[in-house]
Structures are given as structure tokens and as C-alpha cells.
Amino acid sequence: MGTGFLLGLVTFVGIIFIYFRLPRVVQNLLIRAHLLTDLGLMIGMFLIMTGVSGSIAALFSTAILGVLMSASISWARYNRGYAK
Image (cartoon, rainbow, N blue to C red; front, side):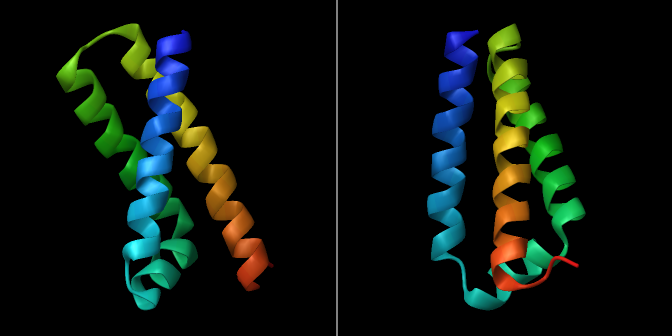
């Protein structure tokens, strides 16, 4: 379980670094379409993580990553004024 948590946290940090390198237009699109962003990220990471190892740690890391991404997208929407 600790391995899955660490893997999810490291993957989250990597995605955040990639996000900040994207153009501002793409960043705004990802934040406005938060449901599609969340779904696409979860499905993609589930396929990648379970395809690599197929262990329970990969599933746990995907769950941790999903929670962290949902929280960070909600926080970004609130700070940019998109939340209603």
C-alpha cells in the first residue's frame, strides 16, 4: 500500500510539471472540461499502471492519483473563477 501511495504521488507531481509546461490556452481547456480531464487521466493511468505491473499497488496508485487530480482541478477552478 505504501508503494502504491508513493507511485501515485510521484505520478501526480510529474503530471503537474507537465501541466505547467502547457500553453495557457490548453491549461484553461483542461480546467474548464474538468470531468473529461479527470476521466481521461484516470482511464489512461489505469491502463498504463496495470499494463506495466498488474499489481494491487498499481491500482492503489491510480486511485491516489485520481483523488489528488480531482482536488487540484477543483482548487484551480475555484482560484481562476470558473467554479459556480
